[in-house]
Image 1: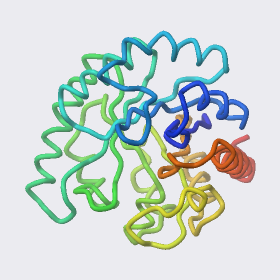
Image 2: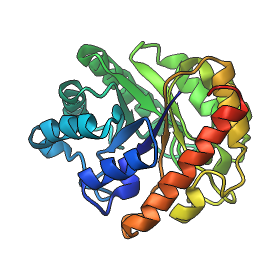
Image 3: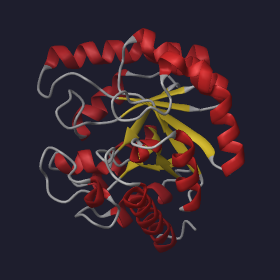
Image 4: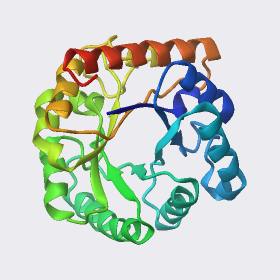
Amino acid sequence: MKLGANSVLFGGHNMETAFKAIAMAGYDGIELSAINGMSEHLVLDNWRAVADEIKALSKDYGLELLAMEQPSQDPTTMEKAFQAAVEIGIPIVNCGPGGKTGDEESFKATLDSLSKLSLMAEHYGVILCVKAHVGACIYNTPTTLRAMEQLSSPAFGIDMDPSHIYRAGENPVEAIAAVISRVKHVHIRDCKGRQQGPGKPELQANGRGDIDLVGYIRVLHENGYNGPLDLEVIGAKEYSIEQCCVIAAESRGHMQACLQACGAR
């Protein structure tokens, strides 16, 4: 598994600062945030202007470009994301499921959208991933399995985030085992409690919450998963660089310990 961190943790700081801090914390790679309002790192409306800078930062700091995250399923936005991914050398684009929990019509609309976007991803030669998300139409294991059944494109994969599954009232260790056959990306963070939001950024740091992340990573290892394991901590845009670095480093240490505990490193 490749340990990475989403640059959204450093959303209040510039892109080079994110690269530098993530490299200093010992990560293998980086997931670039293209999330409007949470960061100004990879702004898709202006991606060509920063493509060369991103490639140079990846080389200078020795960080593999593991993925990109942008939440929208808007076809125009997604095409920009795919084009940027190809030019920069990013293999995976993560998006959100959208829709509303319990709304069958929005679920069907989401699957139709993801089906078309998967074909677009095939055209560009990248992988499109979506994860279960609290409040969305895909929010737990049963809805994830439904999506897996109906979306057969090889360019489509599941992105798993244990904190969303935990907040859906499920056991993330059992959940990851149920969908592992299609998992192509993993977002990881901890969570204390089953409230709707993930909590303060420092409580999203791996090891601070209630989730059995050792068991979660063990399932990935036992099933031969060798893709990205990207820390995603949100809500830290107003945090100092010191606060962000502590969260990144603490989580990296916990991730390494989990890998060692299950014999993956």
